[in-house]
Image 1: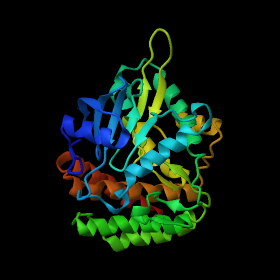
Image 2: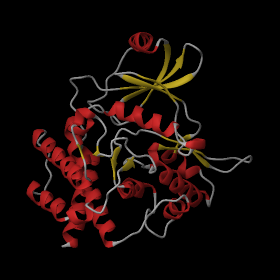
Image 3: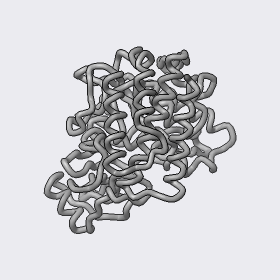
Image 4: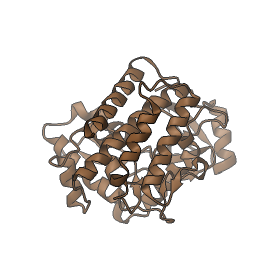
Length: 330
């Protein structure tokens, strides 16, 4: 996806950047165009290893408040996942992290959204169950300081409790919407009231956990399987939107790939791996708020990134549906 946030370098510039910071050069093979925020390149390092270089936007690029410093967040998440026992959450290896870029190993397989139609019958339920277990183990990762919100200090969006942090996250998006003149088709005051009225549900979350918040099929790599073995998940990527918060918030983006409800394969795998998914009225209220937050984020980011057309219309429908869902709660 094309975006104004993407910063592009010539092969020579990219090689020089890596040599200066990582102590190794590279040969650029091609740009990976599936990403929506950073620029990603497939490269061959000097020692012959294939790798992916993710390049952060330039310092003057148009970004939202929560996006400040999120390349550092992604590097932190890869380090934390690598420290889990026995590859509990499959992910690329972080080969180098700098101020402007990170270098990652190349995963086996392809994004789920690209291979889904080629999977054999019956494979999807097993993969959803496997994804449930992976997600439950991801949710065992907790912040060292016990705070909720976005990890990057540059965002300034963290707090000692989830209600305060989530309210600040919504306020930051509303400020960005005003800054970028994003048409929301709903009064910001009504959105603030909805968040305030959900305070009792948000207050039930007392322990922050790592939330990827972008687990749609494009960020999940799958090996489709062959005669020698079953299809399997080989890695989870793009942790840029990650925050410390309510694990239930994960269900919002997971719903793009299939059933994330209490009776689906994902929930079965999640609980089998030790995760807790109790679909109480309070949790369902929080899910409605998280749908609102994601939809608001998607609408607001369209302006600085230069998205329009069908994608912008899709985001507005998401926001309208989320607002309608919260209105229905009364």
